[in-house]
Image 1 (cartoon, one colour):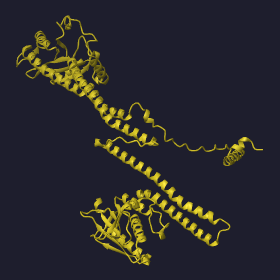
Image 2: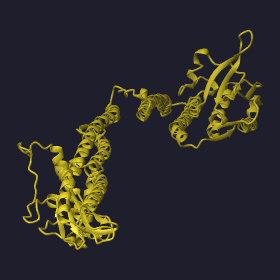
Image 3: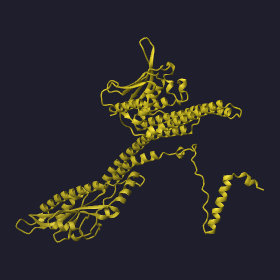
Image 4: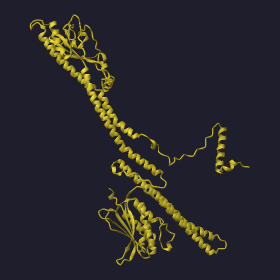
Length: 588
């Protein structure tokens, strides 16, 4: 007796489980583990929300801000790291010290030298010290005077030679500025400047109680008659600038004068320049951030709106959401908006077409199936007359042929759109195509009913159109076949090729001499499954031919219309189909 589980399990599922168990047992026998049964592929739900819908910050905004802030940050870093500007100031200060030293050395050589032009000249130590103090002290520069033997003769920072008392200027009688009084920007700038500084490339300055020329290589160069300068690193990362010039009279070097000064004035100048540039950089940064946010808003906000509208379209079931109209922007986002609106319109049109096509197909298939069912039910009666049964079987065959023709035309119409989009556009010679079409219908037997097919050219060459010869041939064949089915015996069917003025499209007219088309149906004949034919042609056409023709022509940018030809007295002479085909030269 089967269990409830066996009863509830479908037969295919039970077979699958049995097969999987058999494979597992075989795998265990050979030392292998059975593979787990494959899981069905997970199909992403159409109702799933996008991850970006819950995003709080826009990545695009962050990228725009980053890319726009980087140049300002580099400008700020350059404002802090003013290495080239600092070197220019140091070179200018050294040049200034050299000029000042030449002036002081010239004064000492004129006043504090004992001897004449023909005697040996020597420096007067007392006079040289006094003159050195008077000339240099007001400038704030420290001067050292070395003899020609390399010994220190005078130092402007000393009161006398005996006591070696150094002169240190006292601060003014007021409270010195605290660290809070210093601008925070200066402290930050000085700290960054110290981190980026290349002061370690300078030799260290050592203050000695009895310096000699050996402590100042630039002074040794001055004793040889050359100006020289040097930069040294003092306490607290203060640079000591020095310039040495020779003291000479009548081209005789009597000593070397060394002027030194720290770089505090240069540092103050750099600090002011750095502060001004930081203020400008901060203002530029603020403006850049505001403009970047504005630019990001003009880009991200419309994109977010379009993305949300696309979600609404994707999630819509009954209503039709609209894509916001941003085409007035006149930029790429406006182009994207226009493309999305066109795509959405085409999508809804396609959906409506599919729904309408499905309803029409169901209706058209129902009629022959109903007729086929009735005929089979009647033919199945045992006491039915054989002659009537044979007649019913003929009806069955006709309905089957009608269904076959209908299904073939439906399949053709279904894949027509995809083939049109995939088909390669080329130049088509309409004159040759229409001429071959006329010869084909003539040779096929259009003359069996006495209908004459003629082709007439009313345009100048070339006859090159824009499209595909196979599809245009399908259009002309359907229209000509439709016209022949309405043409009476012995009539004429005229195909004429002309061209609209000013290099417009080609115009192909197909005229028959049939009963014409009712005025109310001049447009409805291009609808799907519309057919209004004589009784002898009933069931031989699905009503999709002219609908396919219009779809093909609209795809290539052309058109097809129907009208009636009338005599001067208003009598209908026949129907006329006018097909406008885009010319190849108009697409350049």
